[in-house]
Length: 105
Image (cartoon, rainbow, N blue to C red; front, side):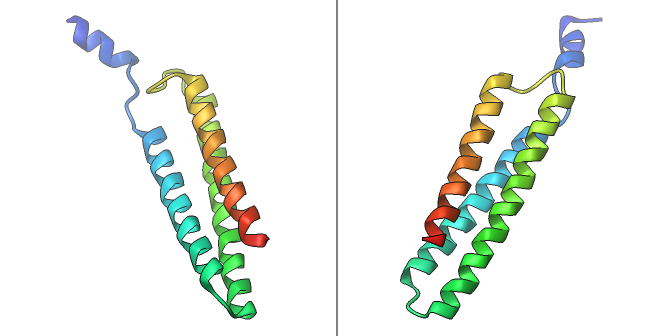
């Protein structure tokens, strides 16, 4: 058995963290675009609908962040440092919270 085959045993077999981070960033992009629409919308009723959409996107982001933390607790081997994954997930969640708070204001 070669060293590479032994090393493959310890490497993560799926790209779950990358997929989750891509999903979170796509959701943040949608939230940012919707916030831009809110800022430019003069009608109160349409702004209220857009704010509700941002709120729903923020809840989706919270679920994705929870999945990241769940995967972090389940996986022994991670593609990069556990603390970095935790910090990145927390920071991205904070961004979503800030966008939602800005939309409400």
